[in-house]
Length: 516
Image (cartoon, rainbow, N blue to C red; front, side, top):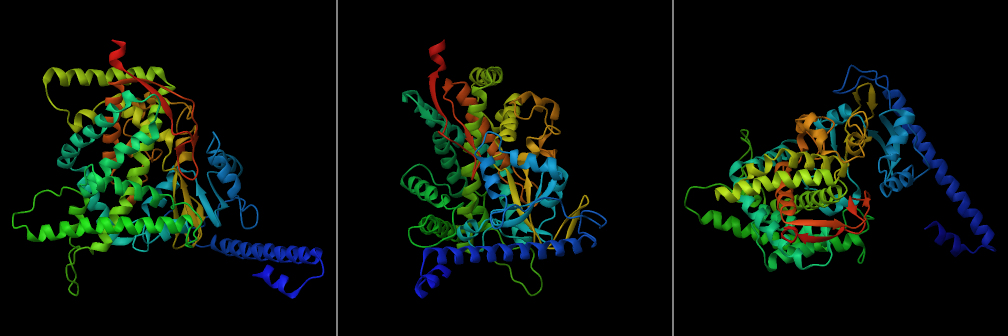
């Protein structure tokens, strides 16, 4: 707007216009630093206040540098994500300022924590102390009723419902056969391929399993439609928040509309079928069933029991597809990459799984979900892959009040980035963190109780599908190493904006029967 006014009033030379642009820019810089100084003075005053849940008060705002006006330290942050050392941004500032420091990223002043104890407090103190904070493109795309941004009793209720369903032995027994079928079918098609892209192939497996778990949709036209529209939808999660026709966000919003139409139809048909049923309810067969059957918590005197609205269920079914579609196939892909570079681990993995295959062949029994999850070295390979992959490299939270954690004051209104990747790649937590060493987990033991191992997040928002994820990866690795040998081409991991392979990890496979 300023440039338009300058031009319409008519300047005699380009130098005049250039000078005015410089003056306007300088005014912007001065305004920015005024706002930052004002914020810093507020923080300094806050250091004399007692904190929230973390300690006895007297905390100090973490040291750090806000970087350049407007852009802060964003360019350095992004550059590290495209490098072979994605934690270099964090490591440099950790050395200068300590494990918790302040910076300015993606347009937001933010406090970064690379301390597992601080991360734990942030993740557990949810709802009345910290709330989710995400880029505007994500909030625009998911909507105001998104479970990702939801707080309080409703979030706890939905999380408990889905987690209970996914962790039940009955569900895992039923889904195991379906995962096996999808894995075997996909791997069977590989023997006719000269070169295949692991990142693409694993997505075929996981998406089919995902829609089965959520909506009981099997192979066919509906599955392919959902796959196409979902791929278009998630492209807009990290983009400029512009909703003009032709923009990335606009296209993704349109894809979501088409997804919602199909998912809502499935939900409505299921609701109608449930109302017509007279038999006693059996076990829920998918997430749609779980959410349709649920009623609100015990009502107060002025509240009546209500089921979840169908629009709400439909929107959140789509949202549940995001973590399942992004994390599991990348974990499978990166397991293949890491094993390709560690022949000793690959050999031990193959021997363990070959022994299981031999036992099943001799007994004539089907595989159970416990068979896969009880393979110790296989689980160590998965844990090490998740540690090094850092597919969920951190979460963003916003402080609702001043809070003191381990002597660090996080001022009200500031965002906190709990950096999981920094913890996973810290030599204090893991010896030789950049080496793929599955054997380290034989000593570490119960990874789920370790504050330094958070591939699925933590606290009230711990991923409810973590056991299902491990089961899927276990089944994939079992059938892969007992069916094929492979040679992987050189490829690089990119960590920004999401974790992915630069070339999608091309490999060439040879059936094991060719070696016998």
